[in-house]
Image (cartoon, rainbow, N blue to C red; front, top):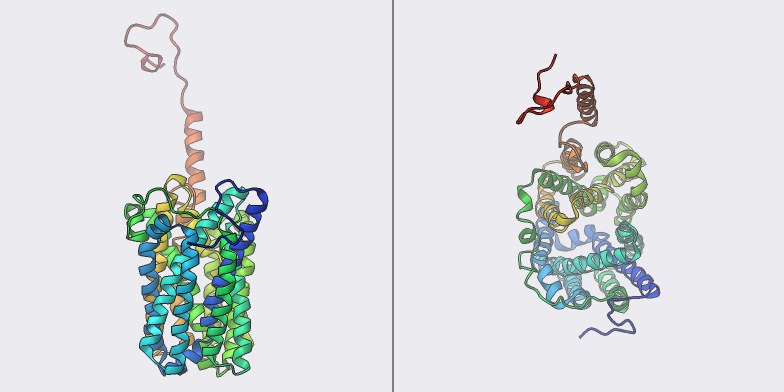
Length: 449
């Protein structure tokens, strides 16, 4: 039983109820972003508390990706059986417990405790993520405008605020255990308060027959045969890789490679997030002006320039500029990929699930790859691995077009259309019969002069 707190489930909300739900979901996205950044803002301290190398930390972080994958396998079924309202409410307690395990690991130095906490944090996050995105889509339909990007921008705003708090607490010498426990407790209480307001209905579906276990892989298995879907999936993989490496490694690289404090590392990542928020908030204008393909390619170039500058900057003042370029380039890959996957409404859900699975796979592979590479070269140069993702996004960008072949250019298509029109214009006119047409004979089969 989930308390309504004055916001009863309804299938016919009035304008005021829809407005409250919209604000509530914006708050949920911001809270989840803040919880994520609470952990990310103290990664250097966590590494030191666990006494592991970058490679060892990468191995432990992979347990989070395993938890996210396990969560995705059951969230569709759980949402249909129990409803999104229950998922958001009960996953709040699971998230608080999991975060407490992570906090305790920073005191005990237990790698097993940290890995368990990471797995449960990501497992709980998967439930909240699916539920709040589902409710955001409901509100968008009720509002009648494309407001979904605003919710994802709110997530990044929550991250930015939490990063700033983390930088301050790190500078003030507050231990991660108290930071984690305090932030998780406060944010969970706020989340429980706004959840009933955020969900318009959120009750269980009448039947769960259409919600099998297996998550996106079960839903999307037929879509993997579509070449365009797979190519978009690689673009989403590249986008997830670009964001993920920044979130997990920028702050640690600032500490290890530039000999700066944890708080400075948080501020550099904060620059990355602010650049990403700014571009995402104006994403619709950018995409409408230059198109999806050019947006992806410009973004890929910005990421490469930012990464190369970050990896080889001889002066520290160039690092914030590099982080801003990296963040601006990382902003649009994921939204464009999911938008392209939704071009055919009748197949949108399955295709979005298919490309989303590529992001999950990226979470399993990328931390390990960067962490192990950092054992051979400095971490900031190991991050150049992301350039491969940017090159992939640049080369496959045409897959996100709404129409036309995957690899033919717009100019080539225009030439083909022009040639066809010219051929039609130059075709000799058919000779019209002057007398009666015999049986079985049509004007097109009559002799020409």
